[in-house]
View (cartoon, rainbow, N blue to C red):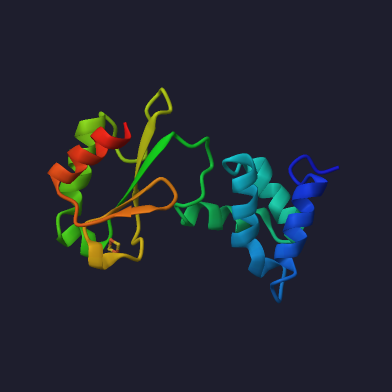
Length: 158
Ligand code: FES
């Protein structure tokens, strides 16, 4: 029995795979399912997904390391994903990121030892009209950021 794909998880994955023309094409959604179930995707889980889909483990690893929305380690309670791509950078994204790093005492890519928060510099989040912007946790997007707005946000969520 697969340690990652429990019968319940496999049944859910089977339904996802059935929606795609090829098993390989479902890799993003199957990884999302595994991450929702376990909170993050370990190397063992990557291998299990590769075996399940019949693709090479490196193909799964490339996906996991390309998209910043997949977590390979346990997530912090509060996650600041700050956009570092062109529109945001041109409109002050770097200053916003530096201010947040200073405020939390963390660098982008780091998690507080307590697990309370983390900062990640990410590629375009598809909301350039809100530049400079960040994603808070999984589903909140906050734009037109300023240092003052960062101060308010940190006060609110920390
Ligand atoms: S460049 Fe930042 S959201 Fe697109």
